Length: 491
Image 1 (spheres, rainbow, N blue to C red):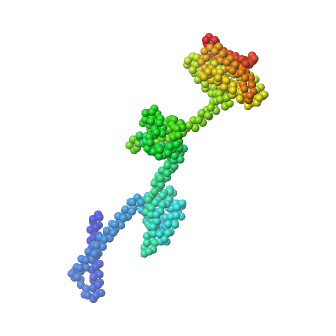
Image 2 (cartoon, rainbow, N blue to C red):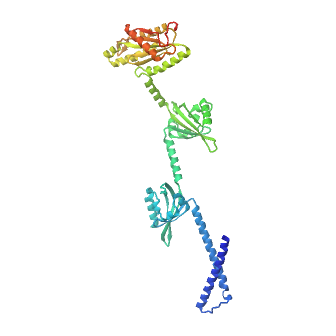
Image 3 (cartoon, rainbow, N blue to C red):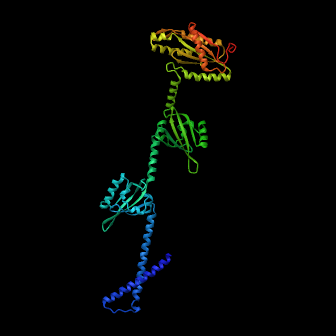
């Protein structure tokens, strides 16, 4: 089809050229007063040269049109955004990339002004540049600004704009932009990630597959007290010796990373100054596109102070604040352990419920501060009077409960109880004053499946019986809800 059009165009151009030059030749002869002739030989030259001129003009126009079409096709298919705007800001041309980016049709673009699509935040800046171009104050400019699509989405374009003149008169501006929205967001996210990594309180370290350090953040340097220069390219085991290849931690870590891609744990290390500290570490394996592990990333937290706080909070919750003896809640934990051990090993234990005699009189006479000091001193005597496996606890006020583990005989329990009474009866020196106090003790013995509450209740009742019988003495309770306990059980 194109070949046919080319042949037909050539013939037509030759004919028009021949006719035009023949007519011009006849008109010229007329002006010169030469005789007009219709003979063919009179038109041979005009027909020949006119036809050739027609073909030349046709081919020249054809090449020009082809060149323009190629240029238009190129402009319409490049990824860059191209627009031509007249001096009033109206669009005269936009390419396909512009239409795809902004979401308008070509017809809609002709109804728009460039100021309709510039983001309000950058409108003043863009207008200043545009007016400087139109006033010929500048002939080109670099622009980086925000624009709005048809849907109202913000996009960021970067490019150049220049002024087009016609007879030294500005007629339009031509702009070529590159869409940098994704690049800008990627750069922003990259910067955000860098800021997070740099400023997070957790230490971050990255190594290669052999453990050579490639990256550390500020928190990691602060935790380890090393400088970046000291750590870069060193093996991670130089900072955390427990992660050396042959260590148990390294073996467990390697196994977890191969199987799950992550390892979490706690380990001890030393800061640069030699101070030991406990850290919590989470290590992740980082793979490439082929699924091969190429790096490891570790998140490190110094939990030494946290553990200390946990220990302090635990002590506050489970130990008496005044005497530092286990409190009621802690006693129940110890008693549960003793109960389980007694059932498994068929052994016995005893509970001693101890209440001071006439302690209120000391508080009333000497004040609560002296009373508190007396309780602290008493607590130390209870520790000294019992074995390391026994538990002395304070239930509150002047009430104490002592758990005697793995007792052999009732007589032995009596001896321990009397030893405690004798220890308490010795004078206490508080603020250079001698103070005397006594105690009453009720004793209950564990028998199979007995509840701790029931044992405490029995020991409490026995203690009150000791007080009724004259104080400063012990009283045994040999019964539980399950069955009686006799001396035959404890020989």
